[in-house]
Length: 278
Image (tube, rainbow, N blue to C red; front, top):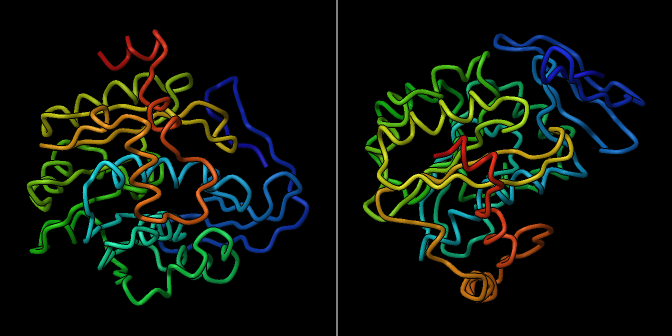
């Protein structure tokens, strides 16, 4: 299997067995077994997640914002039908409800069948409400306010393209409580610097506090840019000791990546990334 990052840079993973390959109403859906990543999930030829490295992505996407929030109770996920982000949100004992809005039922069905080691039962948690519909339409008509909104989207170019716009971010901002944050992934600052720059510019049109941060996702080829956007919450205000205190106080289980030192490390940007995010 090959995913092309640029015209001359690709990621190659050998498939030991193909469990599924079919076209849903929205995209090409695949699940493969691999030696290095376990079960691996692809959409339209793009690597989405895998059993063995999902925590690099989901823990960082969720917990930097969720731990910065003093007591998150209600969250909305747009996308994320594999259930990985839901699983991380539901680790927080204060979390009363998570709404997961996924446009493609096939993603959820495949996750239930093959990706139990990604969602770990979160898709059947009684605190989770599943909506199978367009994310933009859902947010436009929503009336509930949220403490956290997680945009767990495919890359621009498919069904998620309208969700990478200032218009959509503005619609999301209207659904946030006064003390709240939205978090999302952007792109590789190495392979797609323009996408990072444009994404941050759109966020800054809407939110007064936009915090870019880095993680490394093996399946995505290395460095990956994420962002936390808010009117009030700034992850930079939390130091490692306080992050670790909150993790301990909340008894967050099974964290394989995120801790106080990694919270601070994610916010430390190399000079070439600082130039992109300035």
